[in-house]
Length: 411
Image 1: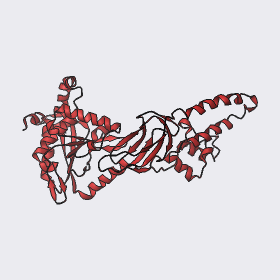
Image 2 (image 1 turned 180 degrees about the vertical axis):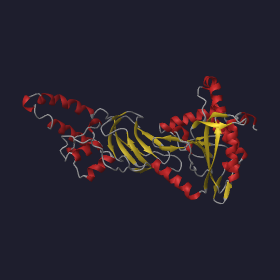
Image 3 (image 1 turned 120 degrees about the horizontal axis):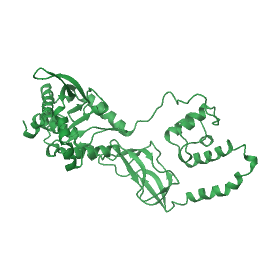
């Protein structure tokens, strides 16, 4: 009995995905609910699990293919998990006596290497990048020595085969650096990011204003209360919760920074859902911490930590990345000194954090002290936010961070 594996519902307003990676190959055993394939949408990567136990008999949608909801991905043979493995287990036992005679001792370098390569190349589908090279050079994959897992062909196998003139038996004397250029199809997430960023440039009248903040008070608070905070809440006290709270304070006083433009109307938001930009191997994602005005530092830190883990594992949902009113991006974790962050449309502003460096500062009493300073950048849409509002917002954030008690007393 066979079962068709189809593209599941991908979320509201998402109808198409890209096959990112097959986790199983034809002939391999599959357990119930075991992940079969990863699909990539505009925002998230999700796994499609097996609805039954058996073996994967056929892959219909190869890696890199764009598929719609309901499209056929693969065919699963139920209850056939052991059938593919049995013949392979018996075969070596029958062939072992044939490999023993001495007359064939001088031929093992050519003959035995070619036989498993040909069968392996025939048993497993080629990755898109490997298939491209095979087609470009008009090669027969069955004749190319394979060194990948389970005898699969790799790009290195193809390049080595071509560089050696098609013999594949001797490696080139010069280290193989690969092609001078490589074209790789953009992932769906990367395409979505590119489209949204270009949309922001094309539609918004973006400006950036800068300020600097002395991080001494926040750093001292973290040092003084870190142990007690971890003991009570089971999570570390970071910088981001202070920034989220400071931004909420400023957003309440300057509602235009928390608003957006819809056609000919300005929409003012009376809730404070703060997006926190997180860099992942797949690209930048922005999960949203809901109702930051109603949450304490521990709740905000817990949300951010949970989203960070899910982002790295590709487990974020579309709902967790939509609906934000304002965004904070921390380029400082990568060592950035100063940048001009780009808007996360349809939001009208984004705050950029940067690295903390000790700099010589002139204090109010005239003394010069080394202080931990951070540059702040606020990019904003000038169509809705005036320069006065943008500068005032950034000054208010600076005040709250340099004297966190202001947020407690709302002054």
